[in-house]
Length: 178
Image (cartoon, rainbow, N blue to C red; front, side):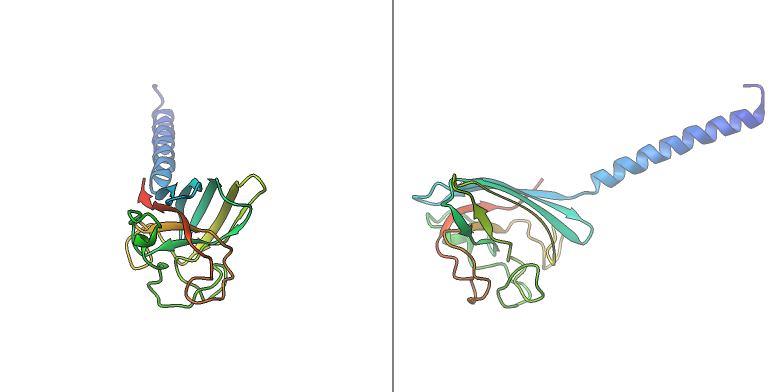
C-alpha cells in the first residue's frame, strides 16, 4: 500500500478485529461450570446428571433424572462430597454455611443447599432448569464445589426443620468442577 493513511487504517482494522476476537474468547473461558453424576443409593433406581454454571453472581442449574417415582422429590446440596454410605448419609446434612432455616431457595430465608423440588412425571423422569443466588462455584464459604448432591424419596415441604421432611436419600453425587 503506497498510501500511509490506508495502511494505518488497514492495520487499525486488523488490530481491532484481533482484539474483539480475543475479547470474545476470554469471556467464554471465564465461565465456570461444575457437574454431578447422580447414582442410585442402595435399592434405588434414581440416576441423573446435574450441571452448574456460574453466571456473574448467580448459578444456573440444569438437571435431568430418570428412575424416580412419580411426584415430588426433595433436592439438596449437602455438606460433604461423600457418597460412600449405601444410604447416602455420608454426604452429611444440608449445606448451610450461614446457619439459616430450611426454606424455598427463591425466598430470603433458606440454606445455601436448598434447591427447588424435582417433579417426576408418570414415567419417573424429571428435569429442572433454574438460576439461583446465594451459592457459587468459586472460592469462599458459599462454594458448592466438592459438596454432595442428594435426591430424596419424598416431596420437600420447605418448612420442616432442618430437612423439609423429604425422606430417605435415593440418589447421590458429588459436585466436581469441570
